[in-house]
Image (cartoon, rainbow, N blue to C red; front, side, top):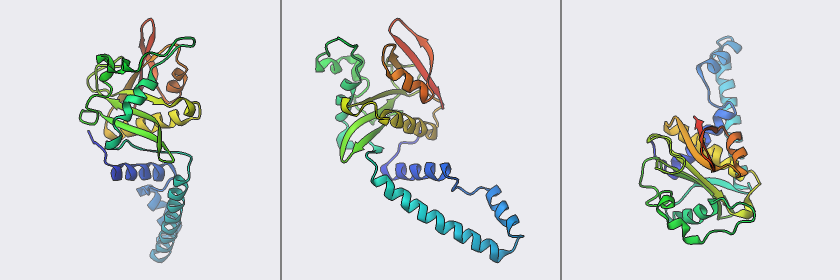
Amino acid sequence: MKQLKDKEYEEYQQYLYNKAHGYIWTPDTLELICNGNDGEPEQIGKQVLGMTVKLRNEQVSHRLSDKHKSYVIRLLRKNEVDLLKDFLYEAIFIPKGTEPPARDIIEKPELRVYTDDFGARKGDNCLVADLGGKVVGAVWTRIMDDYGHVDDETPSFAISLYKEYRGQGIGSQLMVRMLELLKWQGYEKASLAVQKANYAVKMYENVGFKTVDENAEEYIMVCEL
């Protein structure tokens, strides 16, 4: 499976943008251009040149607008790996009226599987939401024997945001980008576990996850890629 570098991720995002906006020319596209110009080389050349200039201008505009979004989604950097422990703690579901657990709960073996030696194992991917240079949320995956494990070929999800940045659609965008990335890497599905009372269940369903199993407290959900 592919492991991305920053430059490769930027190119991948540009590919997604081009695909979504119809900027990837297929044989059918070229055939339409040729037929529309009666096979005249000069006219075909002028139209292709005009479309290329327009494409470049729109891509530049797209890149500039991205820089001015309230947040950007990017890869986790090597010097930010320790942030995953913060987000792991933030990911712990705390039912209304319940006291938060002590922070050292994340040192339990069943939770350390999410962060130990992150970046060195199969299926390790992490995207973060960066707001003006501050990481405010993260989604990460790895193939591990966690609560959402379904098999040894399927990455499990973890996601969280700092409280003040929840409910703004950032989590959904992180999920969608990660699912796109996993599909591009060749994975067939992704999984997660979520407390039944967690409001995030609806978000997971909205991005394509479906419940495949459950126990007294949790749903086990899978998204086919």
